[in-house]
Length: 315
Image 1 (cartoon, rainbow, N blue to C red):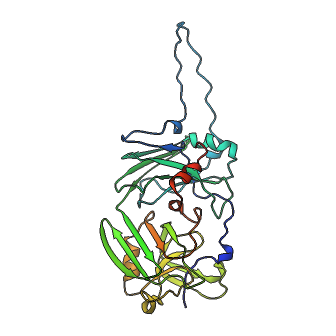
Image 2 (image 1 turned 90 degrees about the vertical axis):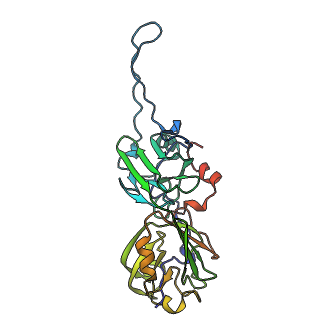
Image 3 (image 1 turned 135 degrees about the vertical axis):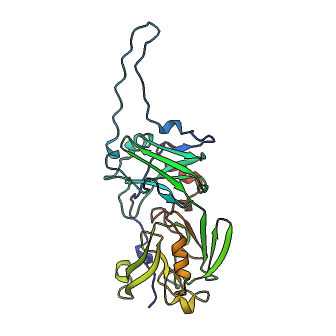
């Protein structure tokens, strides 16, 4: 039975929404280790004396936006991620357009070495518009970068960027080229069959599981399949995985037979990729049809830099 968990073309229109989110003041650029975007810092004022020598009253602090209470962050403290991982914040309720700039001003991203980056409000396929805001650098993170994120007064995370791993799947040649820390190897794969094509474009590994139950009824393919599959690397929230598929034993490198996922053989090929990949690693698909949407997982890298910056409330 072939597999793959990508939505039908009819279900590929995403609702306006927003998923994992984060907010920084517009666009920041830093050459030094401690440089931060000035707009991203909450303004603080201390009491002092004016030119007359009289003690000046301390201004009333600006209340923190209510949206930041209970905000959720997609990275954990101390986590090591791949070079493609965006910082993503999600909110309990949609943030109105008029409040988004205030939210962004309460967020900080500090990277060592410094980066040029920007926040952008993302329409997540599973959330309402205004519930997700992401931060990404202009280019993928450099290996070894240390990043600290502050989302208001109550949420701080520090994470690190590990080694670089970028896998490029060419659906026309049925191969995947894996470049890890400058070393390259090629792997035979099978991708989505005609009419059930694998998403084109850049995806970022969301998570991985050694064994996953895949049910075609959840993605609009009726009773085509329902079974457990091993070494599953999760690429989109619509259900695209890169995983072990027994059908790949005969078809990898020859033709595309899946329902949209990327299949690897059971001879240890799938297990090897599974064991080396981490969340945040980049998987690019070329030669296919429709490009994966920004909010279908982390499709952030499919948006040009100018357009990405325009998605910030501070742009």
